[in-house]
Image 1 (spheres, one colour):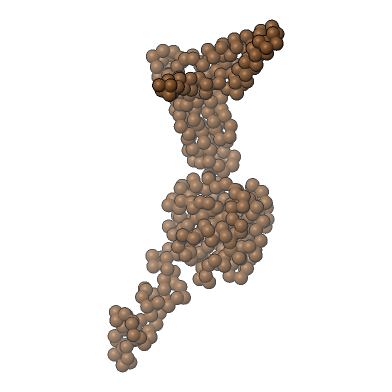
Image 2 (image 1 turned 45 degrees about the horizontal axis):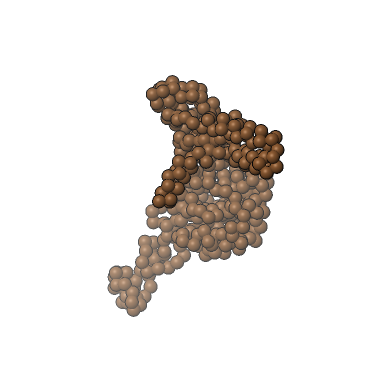
Length: 398
């Protein structure tokens, strides 16, 4: 019997206790302590202090009563912008009840800040429109909301909040540059690119050889066999679908600054968007995540979520091995890294792939002169600014 009674009491008192702020709990503790001291030591001054604090708390409690009949909507226009572009938001508050509502304060979290709005007294059916600007100077995924109404006293002893909306996402895309036509390794023919591997069944004819036990009789070239007097079978060179792997390290220790990391994101997004436009098979990976590559918008949206990490992998090679373990073997690997990564680390990472895979590493070094170098079978491009990227990729050997 006691348990149902306690549950009903908790349901009734729960919202009330949740409305008491930390300052309110401090005032209640001081009230209790004042009465305790007055009772033990008989000091009338503490009786007066305790009574004053208790009366103040009761007055503050009165501000929490009352119901609001709001209909609130938050809109962002547009929902996707490029870093540096302007984005505005609008919060529309309407009294959906049959009685007027008193003025109230609305709070709207925007990113890491909170926007405060004073909503005036609203008659039934009347709306109040509030405009606000979104911080879009850097690439980010910014959450706006939820919008909450706040009731309470001026001293902050009581704070009663009501949630009216859900969160809305604003995608601040990285800056990108448009690349030129297909670079080396990004073939578009349906049959794929021809490799040096000889096989008994494919599309690209290579040569004829003598029949051996176990060969498929369908590969016998009968006209040549009749002319030479011995069975001859066709050989083919293996053709493969072009598969591009675009990987970016997000380790903080690989980059000299936050701006350099943002340049790396812009480089990765620029290359990825161009490959998607050309409808080449693509896989895009970063630390702990594989980015969606079904459309340019999806890739740019996911690039907004990439954050720097600390010691996610012991080495660049381990990152590349872990991130691509379940992916198909690529015909072209493009690795984007920061200026703190040495050529030896890059070369060690690219040893994961065979000699038939084209390897390109883009090393971002903010403010550096653009350059191109050959490190064994690896092409190492140094990018100092985003406009350098198209010309460097043009020089990688189309």
